Amino acid sequence: MTIRQTSLSSLSASRPRLAIPLGDPAGIGPEVILKALRARDWSAIAAITVLGTRSLLHQALGALQQSLYAGPLPNLDSLDFVDIAPPLSLETVTFGQASAATGAASFAYLQAAIEGAVAGQYDAIVTGPIAKSAWKAAGHHYPGQTELLAEGAGCDRFGMAFVAQSPHTGWWLRALLATTHIPLRQVPEVLTPALLTQKLDLLVHSLKQDFGLTQPRIAVAGLNPHSGEGGQLGREEVDWLIPWLEVQRQRYPQVQLDGPIPPDTMWVRPGQAWFGTEGRALETAHDAYLALYHDQGLIPVKLMAFDRAVNTTVGLPFVRTSPDHGTAFDIAGQGIADANSMVAAMEVAVAVMNSRR
Ligand SMILES: NC(=O)C1=CN([C@@H]2O[C@H](COP(=O)(O)OP(=O)(O)OC[C@H]3O[C@@H](n4cnc5c(N)ncnc54)[C@H](O)[C@@H]3O)[C@@H](O)[C@H]2O)C=CC1
Ligand SMILES: NCC(=O)COP(=O)(O)O
Image (cartoon, rainbow, N blue to C red):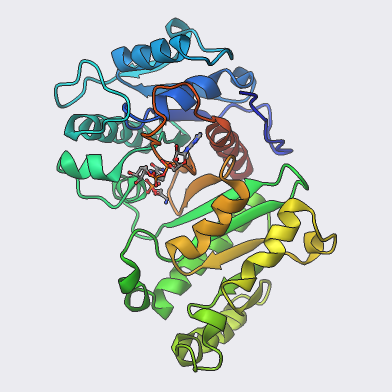
């Protein structure tokens, strides 16, 4: 596998301290982290600490060495590593088989990273993927890592955003999800003007703080097909989304707020800007997209950028990024996982940290 490096002009010589919890040891987290650690010379731009169970990382390394993977791998002896004993008995793992024990382990790794970040030992956390079902089996009822991070940081306003830089055009795709891990049928009730205001505030702040965009252009999706077609296909747009947008335009005169944009067509221009198929799209695509629910945002993001998109948690007192993919239990232990999204997650963490300084 060839690692493609994301070019980030804002990477600087200062060295943010990155904590990298391994994620679920039965998934591809340890593998993509091992590959990512040798994808470039990180020592020039970051100080990296990996958190996990040493014997399990050795097991993942052994599996990689036995696989067809022929790329460079790190020397574990020279790694800055925090060795965490698994809370439930776990001497070895069977790749692809998550359990209460692997869930308890990935939970403990993330908890240790959060404690370190809150104590000021780390500037950023780049998380390996976990399985929410394994956390649940271990008795941890969180919808995902985002909510544990927010709780640990004492933060009740936070958001899930994805960013990726096009390898074709250099254009940056940014999308924030207004709602995340809830059943689809709950979306219309959970999605309120107050919630959307909170998410827009987080997005505007992050665009300025993390990306230096002080006059961003933001597109807001409608909820219903064709944004409700004047109330004929759903009433949320006419009942509150259009009036809400008017209020927000008054609140944010420096922001160009477009919407509600029919959710299907909203992604045409980003697709053109991403793939470079329509020259004007690079100028006319928005700086960021506010999607109203998980799959409205993540289907297009993953279609365009599954190999390199980065999940970020906005609103925390420290930086958090993650690859966009999950534990990929179907290929764990085979050596074939693509580490580019993990590399991008580490690079974006460094760039955002430098932008905040
Ligand atoms: N940040 C996180 O911790 C995330 C965790 N998850 C969790 O991961 C578990 C599995 O979720 P899925 O929906 O199956 O998504 P997934 O991303 O784990 O896998 C989807 C498909 O993409 C492939 N794939 C994923 N990453 C890959 C990589 N780096 N290289 C090559 N192929 C790759 C997999 O083999 C699979 O066919 C779930 O428990 C989910 O909750 C999912 C997304 C993010
Ligand atoms: N679909 C995105 C995702 O599952 C990320 O979850 P989290 O563990 O980062 O909260």
